Every structure is written in structure tokens, then in C-alpha cells.
Image: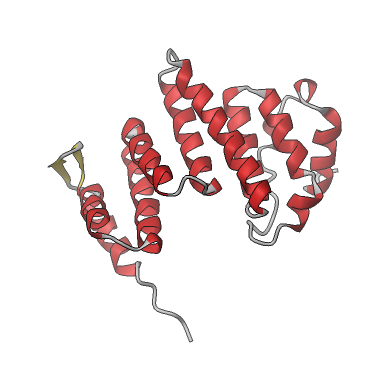
Length: 199
């Protein structure tokens, strides 16, 4: 028996509304974003707020307003400061902001700090190590930071990552070809290629 999806109707509504633009307290945004902001103001349960923030982030990514996306992800992280997945998401939004406005290196530093925090928290909690390790690896490649990449690879090849139960089912390997092997730890790189079945 299939369980009801409580957000199926919402997704359909968002798809219809995103073509319309409306004025809100955060400026002109798609009506889909305005609806989610209204629902967040009324939402009280952690699970519902988590799902609504997920949909809000997706709508803001579609809209392309990176600063507004960062603003709401920061609020999202404040509601659950120890959640490694939220910090991983925010780290990539900050990296996108840095790459768009690269005169401000604070965005880059904060993105890397959050990427490290996300992975370290996942290791401490023994959950989502593969996800957060891959997230930091992708972040490091996008920001051309190979010390951060080596840190990510160190945990990705660890027994903890291999045995983590609450995690994505497989290792992410698609970014391996984007790595400059001459600049990373070659042993860690080779071990990760083996794990990914690329050797």
C-alpha cells in the first residue's frame, strides 16, 4: 500500500505559481516563493519546517537569487545548528555567492568553514559521512582548495564512511575527473578511485 505524500499537492501548486511574480517583504519573487514564506510563518513542527525549507531552497535556486537563498539557509541552520546536511547546503550557496561576487573573500572562507564543520559533525554523529564528504570534495574543487579536498578524501576512504548506515547509498564519484591529481594527495585519490570502481 502506498503512503500518501503530504507534499504532492504543494509541489503541483508551486509548479503553477512560479511563473507569476509578486511583491513581498523580501522583494519581488516568484509566487511559489511567497507561498512557501507564508507556510513557514505558520509552520510549527520541525519536520514540516525542514521540508518547507527544502522546497524554498529549490525555488530560490530556480529563481537564481543567491543572496536571498543564503539568507534563508542561514536562518535554516540557526534553527538546527548541529545538522550537518544544512551546513553542507549553506556552504555551497556561499561558494556560489563568492564565485558570483569574488571580490568578497569572506564568502569563500565561510563556505569552507561550513564545509569542514558539516563533515566533522557527520563523523562525530556517524551519519551522512559519505554525503558530507562528497559535498566538501565538490566544494573544494569549485573553490580550487586542495587542502580541503584532501580533508574530504581522508574521510571518504575511511572505514567510518564505508560503514555509515544513515547516509546516501553509494559514494559520489562523478567529480573525480575534475580533480587535478598533481595537486592532491595521490594515495588518497587512488584509494577513492578504487572505492568508486574506477581502477
